[in-house]
Length: 441
Ligand SMILES: Cc1cc2nc3c(=O)[nH]c(=O)nc-3n(C[C@H](O)[C@H](O)[C@H](O)COP(=O)(O)OP(=O)(O)OC[C@H]3O[C@@H](n4cnc5c(N)ncnc54)[C@H](O)[C@@H]3O)c2cc1C
Image (tube, rainbow, N blue to C red; front, side):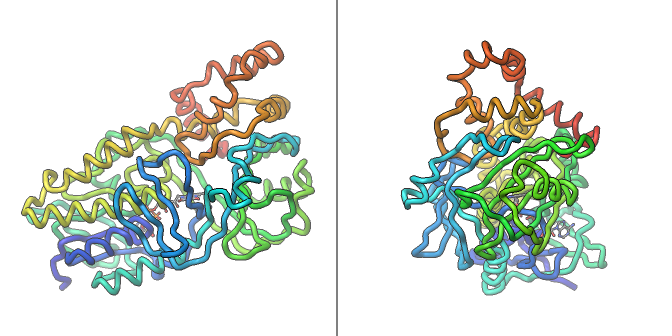
C-alpha cells in the first residue's frame, strides 16, 4: 500500500513538475502521478517561446540568465534551472494576405544587433527533463504511466485514484493536469466557469523555409479556396535545428496551400516535415478561485487557454510553497493555502482579462482579404514589443488609433467593424464560430 503523502501532484507537465520538486525540496513527502511514461518526451503542440523584456506578465518580469542558466522570476524571488538549448528571436510581424504588408511589433534590427533580447524559443523537453531529475533528487515518488480518474475529499484530505487501480492518500492535492483538466471537471470547479469552445492545435516542424528577417515570429493570414476559409498561421524558428521552423496551421491541406499556392509560397522551397505535434484545447473562462476541497489548481487547469510556461512555473512554485506553509502551521484547509489563492486572484484573474486574449484571433476574422491588406499597411511605425496574449489586441488597437480618422474617410466599413468590436463580442463570436466548425483557437 502506498504511504500517505503530504502532497499528491497530478500531472507532470511544467506546473506539476515545478510544484512537486519545490515541495519535496522543502521537506514534504510528495507523490507525482503522470499519464505519460517519460515527462521529457513532448508530443503536445507548444511554440516553446519564453517571452521577456515586455510589459509584466502575471505582474512578473521573468528573464533568462545566460550565465547562470536559469529562468529568473525576480518579483516572486525564485529561479528555475534550464540547461537546454535556446534560440533568440527579435520581433513579431503580423503579415497580410498579400504577403507584403506587415505590422511590426518590436524593433527587429535593433534587437538583432544585441540591444535586448525580447524572446527565445527553448527546448521544453530539456526544461521538463531537468525538473524531473531535480524532483527525483529531492525525493519525489514518481508514478508514471498512470491515469488519474478520481480525486475524493476525505476527512484527512484527499484520495486520488487511477484507472490502473492505485489509490493514494494525501493531505493536499495539486491539480496540474492541464487545459482539459479532468480534476477541474469532477471536483465541480468548472460549474462557475463559462465554456467557450474546444479547439485543435496542429503544428509542424519543417525545413525548406527561406525569408528575410527570419529570426522572428510571423503571424500571417492567407485566403485559400472557400472550403479552407481564412488560413491563419504562425512561423517561428525551431530550437532543434538551425534550418528548421515551427509552423502552426490547421492541418495538411492548409499547409500545402500556404507553402505551394499562397502569396507566401516564395518563403518556402521544397518543404519537408521533420515532425508534428498536436493538442486539444478546451477553453473555459478562468475559475473563481484556484482551490476546492484541499485541491489547489495550477497552470492551465483553472485558467483560460494557456497559462504559458511562465504561468505554469509561477503557479506550481507558489502553490507548493502554500502547501508547505499550511502543513507547517497545521492549517490543512482553505485558510492554510490562502496566500496562494490571494496571489492567484490578484496577479491572474484581476490582472489579465481572458476576453482580451480572445480578441486577437477573433478580430482577425472580422475582415476580408482586401480589408486585411489595407489594415496591415496603414500602421507605418514599429509598435512596442509585447507578446503578452492578454495585451496583444490592445497593442494593435493603440497602433490603429492615430489612423482611425483616415480609415473612417477611406474605408468606413472597416472603421465601423473596428469601432463595434468589444472583448465581450469577441467571446460570443468565438463560441459561435467554433460551433460552426471554424478553427479559431
Ligand atoms: C499551440 C500552443 C502553443 C503554445 N505556445 C506556448 C509558448 O510559445 N510558450 C509558452 O510558454 N506556452 C505555450 N503554450 C502553453 C503551454 O504549453 C502551457 O500553458 C503549459 O504547458 C501549461 O503547463 P501545465 O503544467 O499547466 O499543463 P500541461 O503542460 O498540459 O501538463 C499537464 C500534464 O498532466 C498530464 N495529465 C493530464 N491528465 C492526467 C490524468 N488524468 N492523469 C495523469 N496525468 C494527467 C498530462 O499528460 C501532462 O503531462 C502553448 C500551447 C499551445 C496549445
